[in-house]
Image 1 (tube, rainbow, N blue to C red):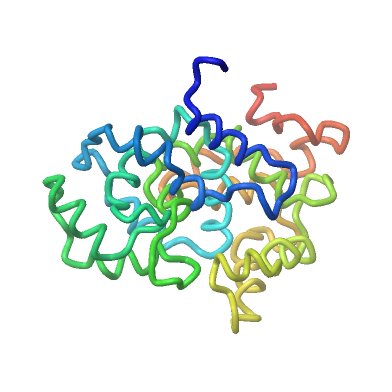
Image 2 (image 1 turned 180 degrees about the horizontal axis):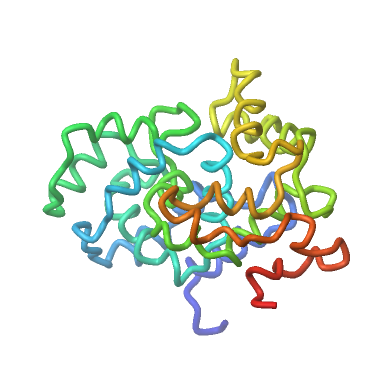
Length: 254
């Protein structure tokens, strides 16, 4: 710690502050002096950015977008290092967001072949309707889909929605998570009272009024993969309440 720079110490202290109102948020952290003087020295290869993820993200329903966003916030530094470097290389004004102009300029300078519908794709990535793409939105839309096709990763996200730990998500739980004001703003759900019900009915494939892990995991998989990925046992066979902190048997290999 003695060999750590004052800028680095200030960043860490800001991120670890006990008071939520004082603690640095993601955008504030990205504007910190440490990033301005150190991280910008990296020269990420923007040609490695898979723009197909933008289109896939735009086609997702609000629940799947919310799940992918949750997963994005849980990724380790190693997993997001490349994407973070790309984001910061385009964020020229260090405000923690990317404007359409910044993305166009950054990708063009990086030698990326821009799709004709890029503006439309970026508008779909902007889930909160702010007019810019923030850091979390960028991570969620550009991370490798293999990440959210991993059963263990999806299981950890599932537990964030299974509020009572029962092993399934009912309509009230989904309403509470997606109806939370913070989520409503992030996912731009204002004025769409029927949207959550429609999403629930779509994901609840067996129509029992509950979303179990099999159904939740199927939602996260590509349609072409669902028939291979879905285990054949009934949802009640997945796990007992006492096992709710462990992976379902289909994931743990039991």
